[in-house]
Image 1: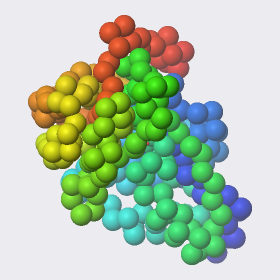
Image 2: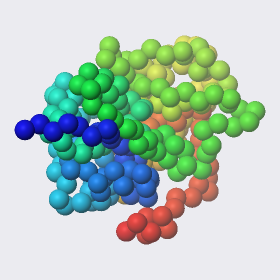
Image 3: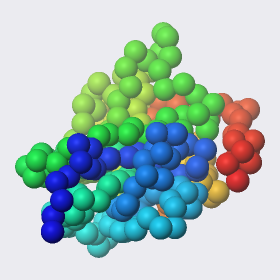
Image 4: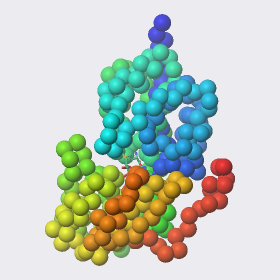
Length: 253
Ligand SMILES: C[S@@+](CC[C@H](N)C(=O)[O-])C[C@H]1O[C@@H](n2cnc3c(N)ncnc32)[C@H](O)[C@@H]1O
């Protein structure tokens, strides 16, 4: 028999980009109190290891351009588990509110009259910037930060290229590997300097993290060998002595 769903039957939880060190305490609490965790491909192995063994896991992982669980199936799963009286965590890589299709899932819950809460997470761009020792905003350089996607449902995503081409602009470009040549072309067409610094940070917050410093002119070469998820930090160069924090990793080992 179906039980009424509790007020926050579903929690949307941001897992951070990979390492346990980048998971919030709120997220950890939600994971340990869950009955079922419905998770994405981008959730890091260290975070997965923190889900208690008795908690059911449902993997609805989505590959960039590959096979994926249809969004409607994911929404149905969340609703069904909540209606069955289970405490559901919908776990997404990074922050669930950034390119996470969060609204579609919330709307399914609203339509079903099921309560939800959002536990935010660290998004990949925040951690990537920290990795290269840079600030995403800087007085006198950029008073705004753009969060862009390289592609959307229609293909390569059009953006305000003219605005972004101005000196000093900074953008965190998600899902930008496949569209790197398109982005480069659009920015150059709008007058961006070819020596604008661009940094690719691949597998942020994971053991195989890799930082590649480039310029707008060499962006396509920089993405050529990247196989993992990657953030393109446009307008930022790695600071030479940028520190990673191994002690954080040890603390969570
Ligand atoms: C569907 S979006 C999800 C973004 C996620 N919600 C976040 O806040 O980071 C997937 C894209 O996020 C970026 N991304 C996610 N995790 C990453 C990681 N660990 N390292 C580098 N980029 C990552 C990549 O650009 C990837 O193609």
